[in-house]
Picture 1 (cartoon, helix red, strand yellow):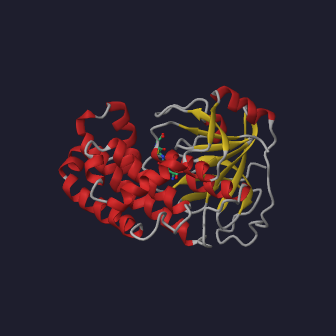
Picture 2 (cartoon, rainbow, N blue to C red; picture 1 turned 120 degrees about the vertical axis):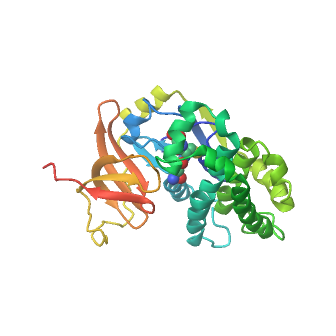
Length: 313
Ligand SMILES: N[C@@H](CCC(=O)N[C@@H](CS)C(=O)NCC(=O)O)C(=O)O
């Protein structure tokens, strides 16, 4: 198998979730550091325009979104399982909570806390991305007490869960630990009063140390240009998962020209390609780029809008 390449940057909380999963799986992987702000000239040839972080590349296959990345990692390396005790299924729904409303509240906390101290270019990019065109940082600062109350209530759920367990599912770590850890990691590192705020959650603070000890596996740095060359030299893998798309409720099927785009961000970010596989959990589209040749770009179904384009043939 080609190397697992993660395109990310150290400060990215969603990347931290994936790095913890790499630690849980004890993986060797290659680490490409991408810019925190667009343009991301060495990433766009791979994704076809998807700009969020992280992105995973294996040869000429490109996995957008942490859920898609983690699902593929679990498929490639099933042991140790991310779902100890047979916990698969609903855990993905926990991810929709942690990465959805809870993540948005945590970003509002960090934004509201930073206020005018945030660099202009960062605020002008992330503001509309997470909160839409009419985002208002001053309002987020005024709302800080209410936001803290929202976050506190939800972290208390995690803390309660850890009262009688070392990890979220029991004695062994699993996906819910990565899903919850990255938010605590983000609050601790980026909210100016983070460590003090977190100290009220005794079980959570102890658990943070246990998750931290899992580590990130074994990353080795890779130059972005080398990653592009890897894609160019490779042929996309198109594993048959038994999902032909024939019964897809959308009516979409392999061969259709589509665009795929995250639904829950405030900026347009569509990627165009031809469906090679479409199933309940994932869509994979083929596209060609002059720098990397033929690639297949994978997205989750949940949270992504697919639109059919006029047939090019
Ligand atoms: N649904 C996406 C969300 C990813 C996300 O929002 N990542 C942040 C960084 S932690 C991001 O992309 N920020 C803008 C950027 O990096 O350009 C996923 O799970 O991967």
